[in-house]
Image (cartoon, rainbow, N blue to C red; front, top):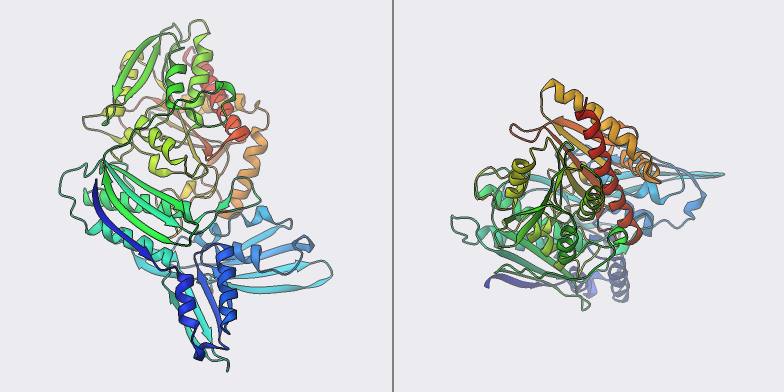
Length: 582
């Protein structure tokens, strides 16, 4: 281990108590926007009132949503409609402040109409309409500041704010308040970016960022949504550090290349109100779990031992590749007289229903005469092992630190040896000569944010909130393959329509997505959102990528996810056999 940086932070709540606990502050009125849970913000209000200061402490994170959750002293069921005019800032996406309102429309019984307010850059205008009552209007302040990150990108990010009025009604302060949460993030980025890493990657095996935060998570009354400052910090630390290393290696921040090593933020809850940060490099940690579930009823991500055991039930020739840590990527080639198909899962290891779906579908095909396929159910075992480790503490977090390989890159984008994980695809294609690759993926089942980098995840804007079961089809630019792809996706989606509950699931999520993200850029084919594009030169002629909103799912929701994944593999296999025979 190599220690890089560590420190503790004085909580913003304590700083504000110290600031206003002086006799000259008595009678002042304070409004503050900070990053903290409701309980701590209310405790701060009480403590300030005890020293003679009337205070309203609001959330700097998702301020409009918190306004509806905490400040409206009326029965929301009496509302007939709600209008929200959201701010627009020239240095942010035009939908940025609209996205921050998510999932408000799902929490209110009354319809919500969102519109742009081009006269505002920092407040929402809210109008509430009620039965037999005068409409109510509010301005909801949304504090943000414009800044450059450590790689020179400009962001408009949520921030703390402080307003102070004296007993005579005079404004004493109205300015940004640099909070503990913001200081922790900036301190971590400063420590990483100023450390001497040398010139040769990978720069470490594991870069571990240990953080303790004192704020509890707040579940919302809609599907899997939760307000979690811990999860938001994990996401922003992981991707911000990864982007810094990409730029150091000469890549763009959104590139999938670059191999710094494995970046692991571990954010834990502190019951004693402390905030701390510790950064160090460590050797790789590969701790495999060994639990077993009934595959068809698996209600949580499979253990790595079970993935291996289920794969062994499929008849055929074993072939393998190896990761940088020495873990084996296991695969099977099941020979038959059908047109061959490649089936894979676990490329992004925090997307876990696809791992189950590949195994279930392959075991079904294993029993069918003439079936012909390769299966590699877990292409990224190093990332999967990290995911298994991280969900021990935070099972309902997205954990994108486990998304990529232990080298820190996306295996699909490797173009130079050593190929490690990607070698399994090279072997599968060479062995089978398949022209179709069914590649099972997932994406977050609840909102994904990066609060200190402009709120919306850079490079992943399309995936910030759920939009149902999504299909991506990439095909050779040859006109024949273009026509094939259109008929293929039509046949696959016609099969998926038959699945109980899937259309209602899609319709509900897509409707809310359009409300909070604006018009979609994807096609709807037989009620399924789809994105069809040309593949890269040298790719397999046809690749079907599934995207089920599965990150953080458990129980019946996880089962529903791998039911859909399984059905998609079987539908795609069937469609390929029919179309290839023509």
